[in-house]
Figure 1 (cartoon, rainbow, N blue to C red):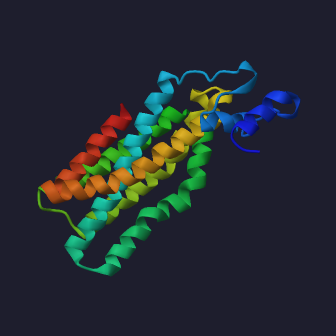
Figure 2 (cartoon, helix red, strand yellow):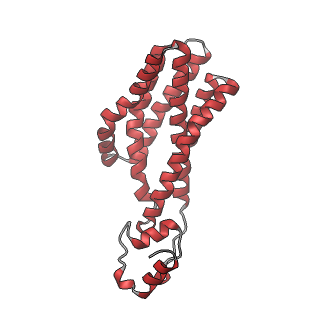
Figure 3 (cartoon, rainbow, N blue to C red):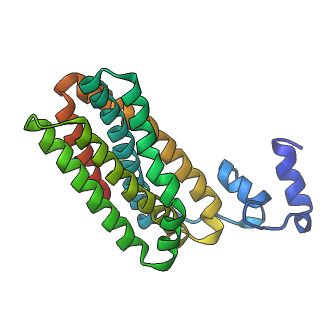
Length: 220
Protein backbone atom coordinates (compact mmCIF):
# COMPACT_ATOMS: atom_id res chain seq x y z
CA UNK A 1 0.00 0.00 0.00
CA UNK A 2 1.55 3.32 -1.04
CA UNK A 3 0.72 7.03 -1.15
CA UNK A 4 -2.92 7.89 -0.67
CA UNK A 5 -3.81 4.22 -0.30
CA UNK A 6 -1.83 4.03 2.95
CA UNK A 7 -3.62 7.04 4.47
CA UNK A 8 -6.99 5.66 3.33
CA UNK A 9 -6.20 2.31 4.93
CA UNK A 10 -5.19 3.97 8.20
CA UNK A 11 -8.32 6.05 8.35
CA UNK A 12 -10.62 3.11 7.51
CA UNK A 13 -9.29 0.78 10.19
CA UNK A 14 -7.59 2.72 12.98
CA UNK A 15 -7.70 -0.20 15.43
CA UNK A 16 -5.08 -2.05 13.44
CA UNK A 17 -2.48 0.71 13.82
CA UNK A 18 -0.99 0.97 17.33
CA UNK A 19 0.93 4.12 18.16
CA UNK A 20 4.22 2.68 19.41
CA UNK A 21 7.59 4.52 19.11
CA UNK A 22 8.89 3.86 15.62
CA UNK A 23 5.51 2.43 14.47
CA UNK A 24 3.24 3.51 11.64
CA UNK A 25 2.15 6.81 13.14
CA UNK A 26 5.74 7.68 14.05
CA UNK A 27 6.81 6.89 10.51
CA UNK A 28 4.15 9.28 9.20
CA UNK A 29 5.40 12.00 11.53
CA UNK A 30 8.97 11.52 10.32
CA UNK A 31 7.86 11.65 6.69
CA UNK A 32 5.93 14.82 7.42
CA UNK A 33 2.62 13.38 6.24
CA UNK A 34 -0.73 14.42 7.62
CA UNK A 35 -1.61 12.39 10.69
CA UNK A 36 -4.88 10.44 10.90
CA UNK A 37 -7.38 10.55 13.73
CA UNK A 38 -6.98 14.33 14.21
CA UNK A 39 -3.52 14.05 15.78
CA UNK A 40 -1.29 17.09 15.24
CA UNK A 41 2.47 17.36 15.62
CA UNK A 42 3.59 19.54 18.49
CA UNK A 43 5.81 22.55 17.72
CA UNK A 44 9.57 22.17 18.11
CA UNK A 45 10.78 23.50 21.44
CA UNK A 46 13.36 26.27 21.79
CA UNK A 47 15.59 23.95 23.85
CA UNK A 48 15.63 21.37 21.05
CA UNK A 49 16.59 24.01 18.46
CA UNK A 50 19.43 25.20 20.70
CA UNK A 51 20.48 21.57 21.13
CA UNK A 52 20.64 21.12 17.34
CA UNK A 53 22.67 24.31 16.93
CA UNK A 54 25.09 23.32 19.69
CA UNK A 55 25.48 19.80 18.33
CA UNK A 56 26.10 21.12 14.81
CA UNK A 57 28.79 23.51 16.04
CA UNK A 58 30.45 20.83 18.18
CA UNK A 59 30.48 18.17 15.44
CA UNK A 60 31.71 20.68 12.86
CA UNK A 61 34.50 21.71 15.22
CA UNK A 62 35.63 18.12 15.83
CA UNK A 63 35.70 17.15 12.16
CA UNK A 64 37.42 20.43 11.30
CA UNK A 65 40.07 19.68 13.93
CA UNK A 66 40.67 16.17 12.57
CA UNK A 67 41.11 17.46 9.03
CA UNK A 68 43.35 20.34 10.14
CA UNK A 69 45.58 18.09 12.26
CA UNK A 70 45.91 15.56 9.42
CA UNK A 71 47.02 18.37 7.10
CA UNK A 72 49.40 19.76 9.76
CA UNK A 73 50.96 16.37 10.46
CA UNK A 74 51.66 15.77 6.79
CA UNK A 75 53.00 19.30 6.37
CA UNK A 76 55.49 18.76 9.23
CA UNK A 77 56.51 15.18 8.48
CA UNK A 78 55.78 14.59 4.77
CA UNK A 79 55.21 11.01 5.91
CA UNK A 80 52.23 8.84 5.06
CA UNK A 81 53.09 6.70 8.10
CA UNK A 82 52.48 9.60 10.50
CA UNK A 83 49.29 10.45 8.63
CA UNK A 84 47.96 6.94 9.25
CA UNK A 85 49.23 6.92 12.84
CA UNK A 86 47.58 10.22 13.74
CA UNK A 87 44.28 8.85 12.42
CA UNK A 88 44.64 5.81 14.66
CA UNK A 89 45.55 7.94 17.69
CA UNK A 90 42.46 10.11 17.12
CA UNK A 91 40.02 7.22 17.44
CA UNK A 92 41.81 4.94 19.91
CA UNK A 93 40.72 6.91 23.04
CA UNK A 94 37.11 6.83 21.79
CA UNK A 95 37.22 3.05 21.35
CA UNK A 96 38.77 2.51 24.78
CA UNK A 97 36.71 5.02 26.77
CA UNK A 98 33.35 4.95 24.98
CA UNK A 99 31.71 2.60 27.49
CA UNK A 100 33.16 4.58 30.39
CA UNK A 101 31.83 7.78 28.88
CA UNK A 102 28.36 6.26 28.58
CA UNK A 103 28.43 5.15 32.22
CA UNK A 104 29.49 8.63 33.33
CA UNK A 105 26.69 10.20 31.29
CA UNK A 106 24.18 7.93 33.04
CA UNK A 107 25.56 8.59 36.52
CA UNK A 108 26.20 12.34 36.54
CA UNK A 109 24.57 15.51 35.31
CA UNK A 110 24.93 15.37 31.53
CA UNK A 111 25.27 19.10 31.04
CA UNK A 112 28.17 19.23 33.48
CA UNK A 113 29.85 16.29 31.75
CA UNK A 114 29.50 18.08 28.39
CA UNK A 115 30.85 21.35 29.81
CA UNK A 116 33.83 19.62 31.44
CA UNK A 117 34.66 17.77 28.22
CA UNK A 118 34.39 20.96 26.18
CA UNK A 119 36.78 22.75 28.52
CA UNK A 120 39.36 20.06 27.74
CA UNK A 121 38.65 20.43 24.02
CA UNK A 122 39.10 24.20 24.33
CA UNK A 123 42.41 23.70 26.13
CA UNK A 124 43.64 21.42 23.34
CA UNK A 125 42.64 23.99 20.74
CA UNK A 126 44.39 26.81 22.61
CA UNK A 127 47.59 24.75 22.86
CA UNK A 128 47.50 24.00 19.13
CA UNK A 129 46.78 27.61 18.19
CA UNK A 130 49.46 29.05 20.45
CA UNK A 131 52.05 26.46 19.40
CA UNK A 132 51.37 27.11 15.73
CA UNK A 133 51.41 30.91 16.03
CA UNK A 134 54.67 30.86 18.02
CA UNK A 135 56.36 28.45 15.64
CA UNK A 136 56.70 25.75 18.28
CA UNK A 137 54.32 23.22 16.77
CA UNK A 138 55.78 19.73 16.54
CA UNK A 139 54.57 16.21 15.90
CA UNK A 140 54.73 15.39 19.61
CA UNK A 141 52.54 18.41 20.40
CA UNK A 142 49.99 17.33 17.80
CA UNK A 143 49.90 13.78 19.15
CA UNK A 144 49.36 14.98 22.73
CA UNK A 145 46.57 17.34 21.65
CA UNK A 146 44.89 14.60 19.62
CA UNK A 147 44.92 12.17 22.56
CA UNK A 148 43.46 14.83 24.87
CA UNK A 149 40.74 15.74 22.38
CA UNK A 150 39.91 12.08 21.80
CA UNK A 151 39.56 11.39 25.51
CA UNK A 152 37.31 14.42 25.97
CA UNK A 153 35.22 13.42 22.97
CA UNK A 154 34.67 9.96 24.44
CA UNK A 155 32.81 11.60 27.33
CA UNK A 156 31.21 14.48 25.47
CA UNK A 157 29.48 12.50 22.70
CA UNK A 158 27.50 10.02 24.89
CA UNK A 159 26.42 12.78 27.28
CA UNK A 160 25.24 14.99 24.42
CA UNK A 161 23.30 12.15 22.80
CA UNK A 162 21.68 11.25 26.13
CA UNK A 163 20.29 14.78 26.43
CA UNK A 164 17.91 14.35 23.50
CA UNK A 165 15.16 12.34 25.31
CA UNK A 166 15.02 15.06 27.97
CA UNK A 167 14.33 17.81 25.42
CA UNK A 168 11.46 16.39 23.37
CA UNK A 169 8.20 14.66 24.15
CA UNK A 170 7.78 10.97 23.50
CA UNK A 171 5.48 11.42 20.51
CA UNK A 172 8.00 13.70 18.81
CA UNK A 173 11.10 11.59 19.63
CA UNK A 174 11.31 9.56 16.36
CA UNK A 175 11.21 12.72 14.28
CA UNK A 176 13.71 14.39 16.61
CA UNK A 177 16.12 11.49 16.07
CA UNK A 178 15.81 11.92 12.31
CA UNK A 179 16.46 15.66 12.54
CA UNK A 180 19.43 15.08 14.83
CA UNK A 181 20.96 12.50 12.49
CA UNK A 182 20.57 14.83 9.51
CA UNK A 183 22.07 17.68 11.52
CA UNK A 184 25.04 15.48 12.44
CA UNK A 185 25.63 14.39 8.85
CA UNK A 186 25.66 18.02 7.68
CA UNK A 187 28.15 18.89 10.41
CA UNK A 188 30.45 16.02 9.42
CA UNK A 189 30.52 17.38 5.87
CA UNK A 190 30.88 21.02 6.95
CA UNK A 191 33.90 20.58 9.23
CA UNK A 192 36.45 19.21 6.73
CA UNK A 193 35.23 21.53 3.97
CA UNK A 194 35.60 24.53 6.26
CA UNK A 195 39.06 23.36 7.31
CA UNK A 196 40.21 23.21 3.70
CA UNK A 197 38.83 26.65 2.91
CA UNK A 198 40.36 28.31 5.97
CA UNK A 199 43.77 26.64 5.56
CA UNK A 200 43.91 27.64 1.90
CA UNK A 201 42.90 31.22 2.67
CA UNK A 202 44.66 31.99 5.97
CA UNK A 203 46.80 29.07 7.10
CA UNK A 204 46.67 26.34 9.71
CA UNK A 205 46.64 28.70 12.71
CA UNK A 206 43.43 30.26 11.40
CA UNK A 207 41.92 26.78 11.17
CA UNK A 208 42.64 26.21 14.87
CA UNK A 209 41.13 29.61 15.63
CA UNK A 210 37.99 28.62 13.71
CA UNK A 211 37.84 25.41 15.73
CA UNK A 212 37.95 27.43 18.94
CA UNK A 213 35.20 29.74 17.69
CA UNK A 214 32.92 26.80 16.87
CA UNK A 215 33.55 25.26 20.28
CA UNK A 216 32.64 28.54 21.97
CA UNK A 217 29.36 28.57 20.03
CA UNK A 218 28.65 24.99 21.11
CA UNK A 219 29.57 25.81 24.69
CA UNK A 220 27.15 28.74 24.84
